[in-house]
Length: 94
Image (cartoon, rainbow, N blue to C red; front, side):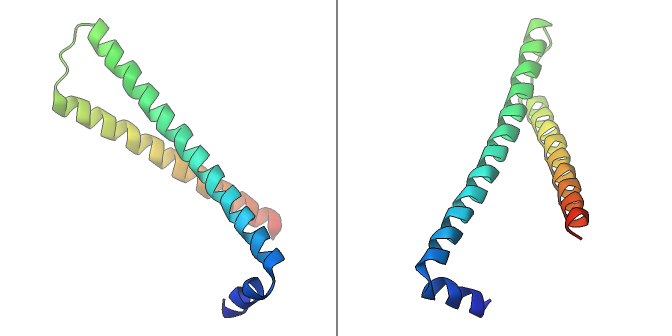
C-alpha cells in the first residue's frame, strides 16, 4: 500500500487517472443508490395512494412498518444482486 501511494505521489499523471477513476466509481454508486431510493419512494407513494382510495385507515405505526419492510426488501435485493455480480466477475476473471 505504501508503494502504491508513493507511485501516485511521484507521478501526477497516475494521480489524476486514479482521481478520475474514483470519481466515476463514486458517481455510479450514487446513481444506483438514487435509483434504489426512487423505487422505494415510488412504492411507498403507491401504497399510500392505494390505502387512501380504498378508505383504509393509515396509522403512523403501520406507515412506518410498511416503509421499513419495503426498504428492507429493496436493500436485500440490492445486496443479493451485488453479490451475484461480484461473484460473476470473479469467476469471469479467474
